[in-house]
Figure (cartoon, rainbow over the protein chains, first blue to last red):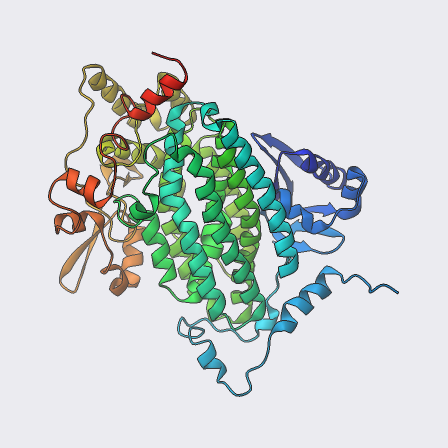
Length: 89
Length: 500
């Protein structure tokens, strides 16, 4: 099984996104590096809009992810309510 | 009642697909004349999926927000004399390489995607290429802005655009992109969109930028990550391109595989300069080149190729050579620049004792055995006042244009050289990978503008090194080049810091 990953800029908004990712994706690994946070997980990782909104305490559009995104690995699927990274093998 | 807000999928369909039109009185083939000659068969452009489903209005909204954040930081960096906060003035030489070697590639990428977007018959691909072209144009502009602050205080950045088209080592990145841009639209998308963006740019924009942050360079890390946030979209486009081609027709598989083989090899050669920047030019270390390679090429690339195996795609040719190279190329490249430091537009130096120890630790199987002895010799010579520079001009590889500096990976004491004869002329290569690429399209590569050949033919300012460097390259000889020790950069830094 391969790992998907996402890296975000280390800032106040990402902090909530990372919390939301940790809550939804069991056994994901969070790696802190200078200025960035990398999260990886076997096979699949999901960012759920509702959970991010709950953490941030405001409305959050899934496409706002672009503002803090650094890089990713995996097949992307994005919709109004979620953002998914997945390997299909 | 207020109009219902459209969901992402509907909005994408309306603002992208539904903007296309059919050709009623013009011949479609004449409108898209480059679509067939490469042999790629497209049966249904509507099968193209853009997973981000980004529409132009959303694109402008988020890009504007990114830009505002970025320029606020540039202002703060400049107003607070941010250049004084970098870890060590040697670091700025990595910024010089970035500006002369990489930023002009962003401009070439913009030109490439603008052209390719025009040539795609499908509207989904056309919109995605349009956004990527705009991104690339934004990258070159923001990078020049970010680095213009350093240009006020350090040597070597004043003629980056002029130099990109002429200087011997800058012909490596330049020719990489001109090779891609002079290919057909689909090869360009596999070359830049997939091979380069999906695996290789990560190595430059993620671990190196994290290193820039770790060395106090707020401006560079900010443009780096801001650019890379666009790259995440580009990577997704690149992967989509591959999947789309492979799903369209089985005849596309061998063509795509051939391009992947070519462009991964070309890309790994190009990255040898990034390897050197990671291992030798970041005074505060984040990770070694080898470690970065393992994370971003072997793990991330490995996962990608496992995913693509369902289409019949295999790992790029020469992957086994590439795997061995991670132990060597940064050392071989920095040594070459150190010994040709008189002809480089940035400063070179011997790593400090702590840095040598770090390299020994990070490369236990190779550094002490093959490379540390070279630096110990250089240290002895420097201590005797005999800092040396190689006087000859190196032979270049006909394909990647890199001097013949690489060794055989199974015998690092033996230089790697290959050659082939085409129409009665003999051509030279650094590797089997580069030789294969030439032999596939010799008519293309015999036309290469090889800087050393051009110097010897008298096309570069004159017979003396000072003519080439000063007249033709517009280097400020004696300030831009030579060792860091004794340079005007070092002298100014010591004055700012109140050192003797």
